Amino acid sequence: MTKQNQNKPNYLVISSIGTDQPGIVNELAKICSSNSCNIIDSRMTVLGGEFAIMMMISGSWDSIAKLENSLPALSKNLNLTTTVKHTGERCNKPTIAYSVNVVALDNPGIVHEIAQYFSKQSINIDDLQTGTYSAPHTGTQMFNLTMVIRIPSSTHIASLREEFMDFCDDLNLDSIIEPLR
Image 1 (cartoon, rainbow, N blue to C red):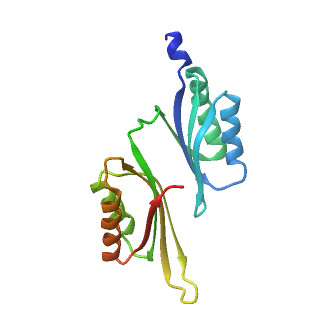
Image 2: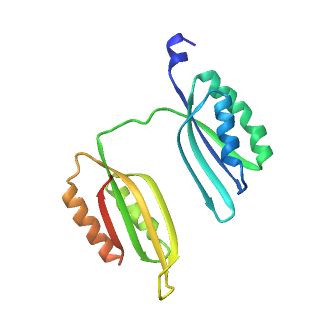
Image 3: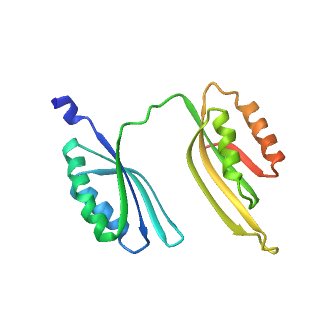
C-alpha cells in the first residue's frame, strides 16, 4: 500500500440492533475510540424494545481493520446483531437541502406514496423519520413524517413545491416543504 493511500481516510458504516439496555452507546463509542477511529456521523433510536444504531466511522486503514476485528466479540457480549460495510466519501452533486413535514390520519402506504413521488422526481431522501400519535381530544391515530431531501439544483423549486402540495392535497395529507435551516 502506498504512503498516499495510508494517509487517506477510510470509512466504515456499522449497523447494530439488539434489545435496548443501558451502556450500548458507551461501549460502541469506547471501542471506536480505543481503536483510534472517529465517529463522524450516527443515528440512534429505540423502536419498541429494540435499540438500533448506524454509525459512519473514519480512520486509517489499520485502525479500521482493528475495529472490524473487535466488533464480533463486543456484539456477542452486548447481544447485538452487527453488520459492517466499507464506504467512501459521498459524491457531492449540486443539490439544495429541503425539509418535508407531513401529518395525516394514519393509513398504510403513506411512506410509499411520498417516497415514490420523490423517486419519480429523481430527488434523494437523505433522512426520514415517521411516527404515530393520538390526536388531542379525539384520540384519532395520526401519522407524522419528517424528511430531508436533496433537490437537484437544476430543478425549478417553485414548480416542484406546487406539484408536491397538489399531490399531498389529493391524498389528504397536510404538508410543508421548505429550505432546510
